[in-house]
Each structure stands twice: as C-alpha cells, then as structure tokens.
Image (cartoon, rainbow, N blue to C red; front, side, top):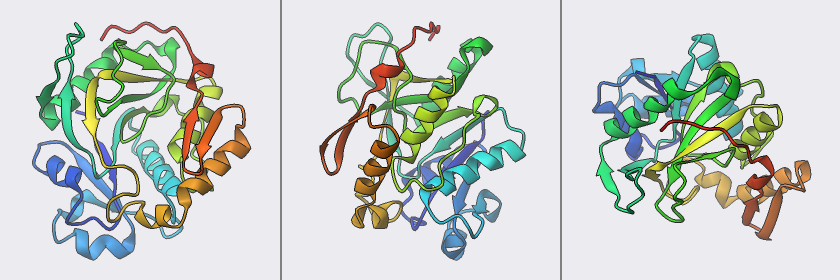
Length: 252
C-alpha cells in the first residue's frame, strides 16, 4: 500500500480525513507546524505526526516539504491528501449515471489500481480524481488538467518543484510548470470525492483567504501565464487546460 501524507493546520479536532484514515490499517503521516503539535498529539499517535521545519510558513512551502520528504524516503509513489476530504463515490465505467457511495479504503484501492497500467514513456507525474459530481464527464479520465484535494504523486517523474512564493493556486502553478516541462497528469473521472470550498472552514487556509490570499494567488498566476487564465471576478477564474491536451490511452 502507498503511504499517505496529510498537510493539516489548526484542525486537531476537525480534520475529517485524519480521523477517517486513523481508523484504517493504512500508513499515514500528518504534517503540522510546531505550534500545532501539542494539540494534535492529544488525538493522534506521535509517530504519525511530522513537524514542518521552522522556515515553512505558507502552503506552497508545506507542499514542497512533503515532496522533499517523499524523496528523502526514496518513495516511488505517495498519496497527498488534504485534511478536510470526506465522502467517496464510484461511477460505473458503463456511464449509466448511477453513483455508488464507497468507503475510503475502496476509494484508495481503486485509485491505486491505475498505477500498474502506467507506461514509463507517458511520464505521468500525478494521478487525481473528480471533485464533486458536478459537471460529470462521460470520459473515464482526463489528461493534463487541474487536480486538487487528493493526488497520487509519481515522485520520480516530478522534476519541477513548488514555487515557494505562491500565496494560493500553488497546486495549479505546480501542475502547469510540470506539464510545460514535459510530464503529464491524469484525472480519473469515475472516482469522486467531496471537500469544503477552500478557505471556507476553520483552520487550513482560512486566514489566507480572509486576507485576500486567493485574489493574490490569481494575480501571481496571471503574471506568470497571462495566456492560460481567464478572470471573471477578483476571486473567480478559469484555467485554459485545453492548451495542454494530449492523447494518451489508459486501461481503467
């Protein structure tokens, strides 16, 4: 089984995914800042807590710290899952539209099945999943698109690091730069999960979003890639993923 890394901030009693994974036999680690340690150790084994270094002071640096840890441990694959993920569904590949609610363990096992079908020449650096049933597509998977919340990283195919200066949209920026570098990602549209809107619940990115962090992240991204983003309002945007379309075949 692939180990699971979970970034968490100020959610010792409310990190839904942390408690869900705690009740499985999976290997998991919660990455926290030092000022959260005393509270988290009341609820989770200390062997499952990883304290971020003191220079890690934003979400981009947190994600990079997690990536570096996977490299130091010489992991080939690692799950990186946000702490507020909840509720999982599977859609049959015959596209009859019926969603089946499944357990976390079923979701993880189904997600890992794709790995055996990945070819080296496809340079897949990331596997992702469909967030919410809104806008479901009949395609079993999408190549080179936005992925967030739950991801499996193929560590050996990640050649580009997170930009430590990104205030928000750090994952989108990371994905774009890795695709531009010649790697690809795949989103499995038949596995669906739910999570709250970023910055809408206590802890996590709450303080960043309250201080217009999302708007700043959008501006940062637009400055880098004006041709890839269409901004509707100060906090609503669309990334032009069609620019990265590729035809890669996978057996799902």
